[in-house]
Length: 115
Image (cartoon, rainbow, N blue to C red; front, side):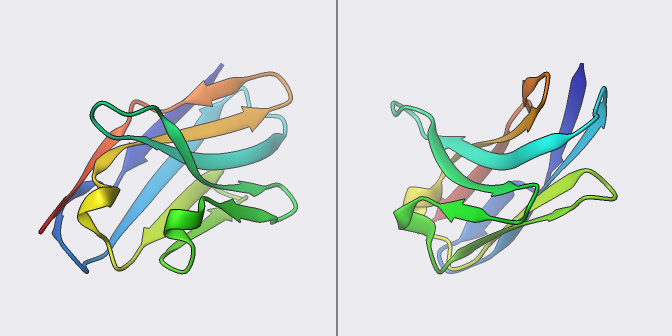
């Protein structure tokens, strides 16, 4: 199995920044994709961004130009740098890691943006 440990959430004012981290450990042979999802109250979970093993990145339109996803392959860690945060970014953010064997999720970290 793959274990994921997330960190970096919190409370920030509109326009502020946060950096989320997610470290993967366990039965990791090859990580194909690492990403972040979020779920706001009363809404469905949505993909925020992902990065492939080759470095290809993809973002939901609402965060393009504000969020940056990156990864450290040596540490099996993915990061999400979030700038210019807006109240609509408030949600629980979940790390997701796809390996050849597992589709693993983190426990979630709360991000709250106050207006």
